[in-house]
Image 1 (cartoon, chains in turn blue, red):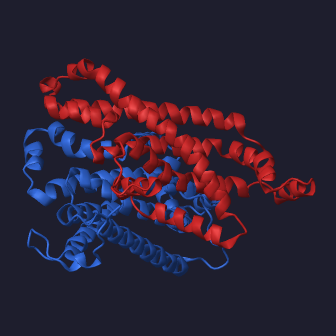
Image 2 (cartoon, helix red, strand yellow):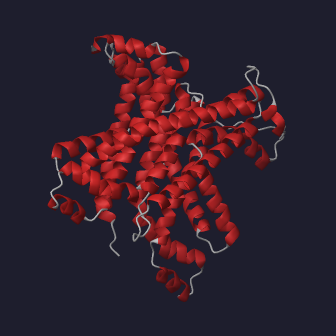
Image 3 (cartoon, chains in turn orange, blue):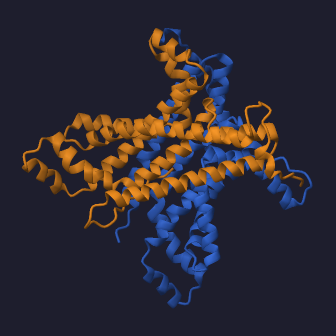
Length: 251
Length: 230
């Protein structure tokens, strides 16, 4: 059992001549964060809309929301990734399809990856937003209506400000999930952190150093997000309420 | 618009997709459920142990597995398992581990962390008085756990364990990164060979969708039947 450890490998230059292996991992981390953050914007906006319409008193609107969640939760993320990357450009009408296919290298895989992760995570955010709204006492919505607020106003000024505070912890774990899930984008060519570790392993043959570094970076990012979100929770907490407790979703 | 597509490619390759691909996916899922729940339950018991070092190790393991992406874990084990194998049998070179065994080990180790958290919740939902009652009757730790706590915890958690299993069933498609021929891998090989990406991937999505929807429906029905009201 011979494995030659070489922890100084990170300061060696890559054969591509673009910098050290450490730099490769750093660039990978940046792509991971760029993918996750861009997708998070889509997920949060779309997920909130879907979550709201699932609780709205319109049957057909709730049905659309529920259908969306079922669709995106019951197809594996990797298959969705392939649908966005391989299938979507073929199904788009002529010009638009060609434009998508002719995107230059990093964007040709980055854009589908962001769309995929965004729409996938929106289903999970929608589920949390719905749970958050339904966790509020029914009287709150009724009080809003009794005060003469319209339905959109009731959501905007009464329900959502409370619901979002309640679901901050599960939203944090969804954000952590989107960072982890962005690694699936390596299958369509996004050189994010895991792919960068793979590249490093293939060039340097130092498998375990490369993966250890990637693992540590993921852990550090995780801890940073958890701490940042805890600060946010404290900032927006409403005095007089016990810290919100909700079941968090799985990975 | 769909005229340029040839959906016959699915029918022609169906035996291969199901016999080779889906068999792999389902076998892997079945083995990982069993292995993952057993290892996960042990992890949960360790995590809840009053013996600090044991609970620290289990907590660290669970948190580690939950904070790294599955894709990275798959790569980790793919390279690590041959070395561990060599260490166990005392060989001087890394042992060759087949793709299937490697996937089973990887997913069992990874999913165990998620099953462990579910089982922990299950164990913690049992009133503490039952444990004391067990000890008062003269049962030891393993008897109390095995005969009183775990059967109830397991029963209460079956729906959540199954829901997690549906998630895991979807996650097994990630063995694609090791070029393994699971259901998605088989479809992707046909797709690349025949240049029928659109047809094959839409078909794969549809099959996964139907299977997972059916699975969730059965879980919901089961949930209503097994629910114990405390």
